[in-house]
Length: 443
Image 1 (cartoon, rainbow, N blue to C red):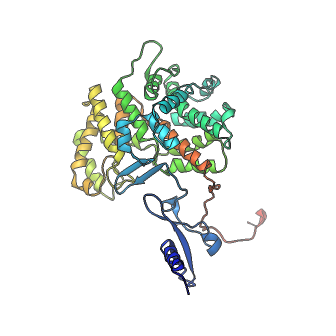
Image 2 (image 1 turned 30 degrees about the vertical axis):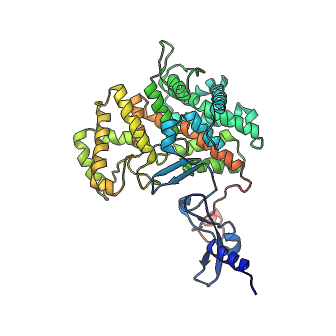
Image 3 (image 1 turned 180 degrees about the horizontal axis):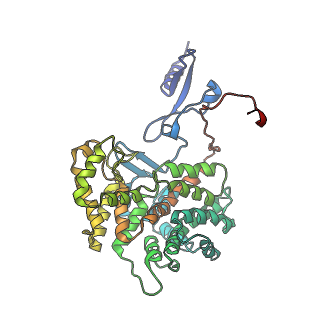
């Protein structure tokens, strides 16, 4: 006779498993179901190949969870983005980037003492090894700043040997701090080199965002005072781009790290992935689109083109692959955008005026409302950065700067996960069947 506890356990196992049936043979397999704290459950297919002699097929891995993570949660349908359980809107409104960095790395918001110590550690790692200044001179002056970023960040491992042992927790922490601290310096130097201006060294008396703006826009010939409205907008941009779950660049960092590569090489790989126009280049594409439209009176024409399925034109900066509702980051960025334009008094500048009119029309147009093609974070960040004076080539660089903390947090989580193995995706082979080699004389 079966006791009640056995029946209950069997019932629970049935609820926590997924049955797969091979229609060719009628054979079936029970696959475990794992529940997360939030979001969809997952079917555990780790033993699927061993038990069935088959792989699953998922191009782009859009239906596959490659890891478990406690850092970021996204519900695209509801328009929710959480970092360690905190809503992105609350962090952007009440926090600053250094506090968000601490949260992503350590799992909790810091108290005043912890925050002060963390800020001190980051601030005093912002300088680059002086020999790296010579490294920049090896690039052409017209090199894209992202190309420079990939090279310089990868080269950090040649200069900081004391933080490349991934098995040493202290070295991992030092590498985290160095990457977060030095990325603004590396980015600012890439910009200065491209425009032929002298490098500006970091200042320890400035905040993270203030220091970056100072290194970008100041020159030795005169004093530069950082505008607090622009510094706050810059800080918000960093917060809103800090992490975004298992996107292409973050997955690249994790895949590179799974082989045991040093953290600097992994982050350089992430930067290379981010460079793609389908990922980090979206806000740059927004500006190119606005330039193509050209003037406010041509907006209706391009709106109609965007609605035409047969027309290749697309409104860049509207809608999102993940968010099927309003991008929660866009709400915060919209506020910053209008603050920056008002502060600088350039709302009538043709390109920015065009952007604001396009925003108004799209938010009121039934087609875009029904399709939920709302302005996203890339739309507003591109406008802000343009207003601040950043060239479009620097837009993706700023994205990389902000995303570095997410990358190192995800990398660390992966390294410390005992279940993590080297990434090795499978394939569906569709090439030639085995065939005999034919000597060259007989071909």
